[in-house]
Image: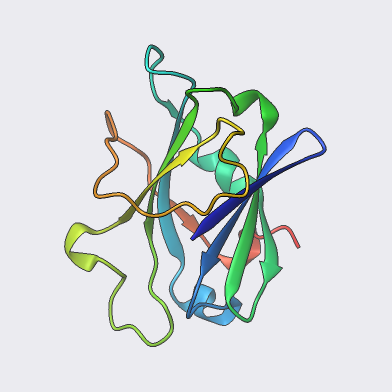
Length: 141
């Protein structure tokens, strides 16, 4: 679902949503939460608005979005915790509807650059994580 690379002071992460396109996104916006943590000793920080603003459309045929994350977010123990609710075109409900979200733990250590990231069983969110909607008008093309 996600792949990373470095470029011009930004960490670029590509999120792929098979079975989705911009038209499907208009009908069923993606909902997500995003929290960032520098290391195990620092508190989680709400970064959903920054993540949404960094989204750029890469492909429409199978919806692919590029997140341009600040290089300052990177570090050996840095992590982006995301929960994503997405409903592909042919689905009657969001994927993993039972748990409401698909969970992702995205390492920002630069060692895992170009390594695909897979979902995890659960992403611990501490406190009330704000839910953001991602609609076509949020995409920086």
